[in-house]
Image (cartoon, rainbow, N blue to C red):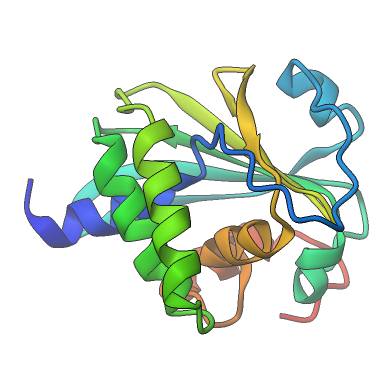
Length: 191
């Protein structure tokens, strides 16, 4: 697979995993739900989009949220983003590409980028076609990740979570058409 496809896809897999505990001193941790159904108990699918890159189908993304979800303020709301993979990818490549995508959204201190990259590289599994990885944004706490409905772990760092989910939901995303497709079914959302 060529490198540009791998890089775009690797950003997606970051969503797929995250058994990191990068707990800031002021964060209030709550125990993650052991299953995806518990983590998203009151959420419903509000949008779906397929990522295609250079003619390759990469994954189908589904956004899970409460009615009234506001994409302009995604950072302040709990939601889930599921990626159903259509190809196989290496976890280490995903970590590298995810940091690149996050840097496109905001400045990240080099030391922080190094810590996040190292942690993701150690923890991200290789993803196989058919795997479903869902990330749940927990405002003020971080990101929780589920593989095929079972808890993988969490990145207990709110800054990481905001930038990570910004890969898909920020107005600065590198995939604006995908963002528009994911949020187009949300009533009353100004893009």
